[in-house]
Amino acid sequence: MEKKIGKKEIILLIILFAALFVIWFCYHQIHRESGNRIRVTVAGETLGEYDLSTDREIPIESGGSVTNTLIISEGKADMISADCPDQICVNAQPVSKKNESIVCLPNQIVVEVISSDEEPEFDVIVQ
Image (cartoon, rainbow, N blue to C red):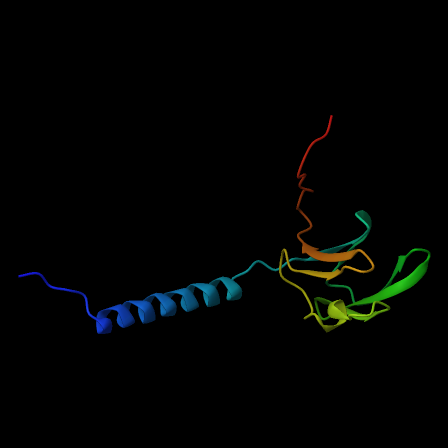
C-alpha cells in the first residue's frame, strides 16, 4: 500500500522551511561584522575614508558645490541632506555594519562601511 503526501504534510513542510529561513536571516542580521570606517566615493573617485568612532559632519561636493551632507554620530553614518529630487539617500537608515551602504544615484555618491584592515578589491585588472 502506497502512502501519499497530503495537504497537511505539505503545509507543515512549508511552515517548517519558512521558520528555518526566518531564524537563519535573523541570525545573520544580528551577527554581522561591524565596520569601523566609511569610504565616501563621488563618481567613482574616493573622496575620503573616515573613522566611525569620531563624530563629525562631512560636506560632500559634486560638480563644484556641496550637494550632500553626511553625519557620523554614535558609530553610525547618516546622510542628512541632499539636493537630489528623490531624497532616497536621506531617507535611508544609518549604516554601521560592514558592507552596508548609502547611495545617492543622482549625485553619484556612495558611502560604504569598511574595516580598517580591508584591502581594496578589484573587479577587473586592465593591462
